Length: 221
Image 1 (cartoon, rainbow, N blue to C red):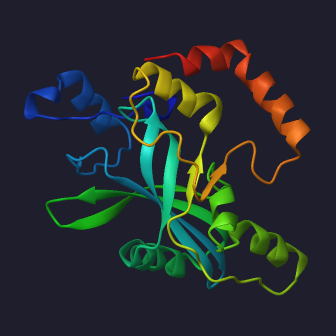
Image 2 (cartoon, rainbow, N blue to C red; image 1 turned 120 degrees about the vertical axis):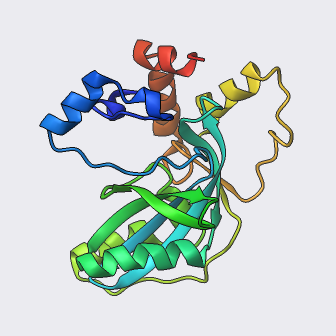
């Protein structure tokens, strides 16, 4: 198990990992068994807005995470992937979903397909990207709540979102200032900065940076 979210989860990589203790526990309690996909890094996030039918969709592809070997996304780009859209709609149409939802997909090379590994019915960290790439999921969620008509722009592909300060900047320092293209900000919006009042954004970033809990998290391996 990894982190608090992995509490109670067992990962079995080979047959000898199934110890007697684990076997007894999973036979006494109700457990779901699922295949462990070997590829643990090719993750794509897909984001939907429904009002019992699909209103808007976009996806993002991770470029960098913190820590670099897998963690929170600090730099990603918007994409439009019809496979993710189709797979997500199979689930959400059947649920008669209403509102915002994030689905995470992991690529399975054995079947050459993306499989849903997580669902989060809440606002996500890269929600600003939906506005920046023209899908307007956040704006239209508010419009649904207020009974207004939907707003729609032409979707702009290949827009980027970064959690630049302090997380991605610390990535850059940890790698010995060796991330190619790090100082390119073209077509990029920024978490905790873009669309915000700039004085409030500065205050928030400084307070966030100097909280002990965050300092420990930012400097972990």
